[in-house]
Amino acid sequence: MSEARIVRRDEGVQGMDCVFKVTGDDTENRFDFMVAEVEYCSGPPLHTHETQDDSFYVLEGVLTVQAGDEVTELGPGDFVVVPPGMPHTFDNLKKDQPAVRAINLMTPGGFDHFMEDLARVEDPSTLDEQAQDKLHEEHGVRWVGPPLHERLGIG
Image 1 (cartoon, one colour):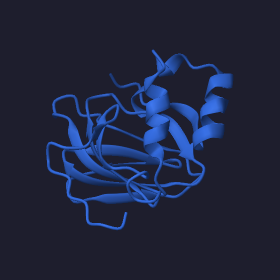
Image 2: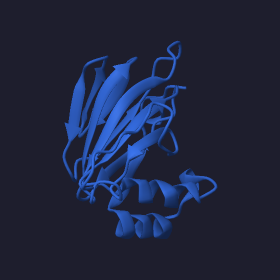
Image 3: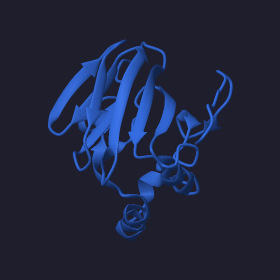
């Protein structure tokens, strides 16, 4: 990326529950920058990233985050960064609130390729161990537990 890049509010690449404003392909793999919209009880399984720091900055709503064994609520203006290898997940656990909006920064970039491969799977929750191992080998992401709403018995 040798030039400035402007991405307007209605531009970006659609992910599963986010819009990538830039991906590792745009930033010489330095980072991915996403705006996430987390609907009620829609968070991902507990997972790790082998090489990526996973950072969240909450714009609107309350985002519940698990990092390691700690579960905490983040509100607008709150920030968390999860280092590589630490199990983590996040979710919108407040039934009466709209989708939580948050910025998600992944460093280094390339997470969009994982999302692309995952989007090709009809129901990611049914992936067997061999398919999960393949995703981990290719993208460094490993599921290590259930989504937070399932763990807490919500929804």
